[in-house]
Length: 360
Image (cartoon, rainbow, N blue to C red; front, side):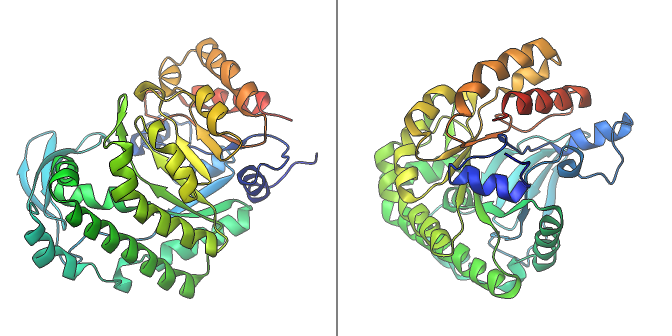
């Protein structure tokens, strides 16, 4: 087979059709670009997708923060951290020197009454929530570079927990499920309304990528029954809308979410990403159980890249790529973002070896 373009390759992978090689994409912490630039490995303006010839790219164009007019406030500061109050009423501690997941300090929205009075009226499809310029620029760039272009953003789970916190969110699945249903319905409708406005103005992407971190080590955040009753309706609505517009759906979830996969597949998920090994996900097992139904991206233990030992990385790739490439439904990606402790040469070797093993 002749060499395919990125959009041709990703389109075929999502449809389990023959390709020349497995796909390629990756996420990097901001620190990584900065470190590699300081080391002289890349230039400050270089784009990772160009450097490594990724097959796709994405644009995060929608803003679901509750209060668009709220200016984030620094309410506590040390030499290394800041606690910031955001437009959701959430207080988050962030590091100044390096990228991390923020520490959740507290939330001003605690009750259904808070939601109904202070938040729900703000969640309207205001065009200010849409970064038209960034979407237009990335869409044009992907057309120029023949990459598969996705609109990326959060779905209902990732919209709700930054507003009320994981603990309040999850306990109210038991204590007040009607409130959870209302939030899921409100956010799913907002997402679709904003997408309609964006697509009417700028045209559709090649696909939709939803970020939904629904698990931690060894377990989803909620039982499969509660997922099916309370969260799945929002997923089904947004996934079906994507398919009605001929856009496949990629779902990202960190953590152990395997118990939720059957429902996600039935709802219309076309590709699962990131398949986090240290949380208990197993790429071989997920491929055996779901590889004929969906495409997969990730599942390569990023901790092997931390070693910067090519032999360790080769062993990881050799144990997985020949198996999961069968059926034409796999995209090479680590099981998390690449940190600055991974050498430039290490990541370069990772993709060269992975793509060599992934040739057809």
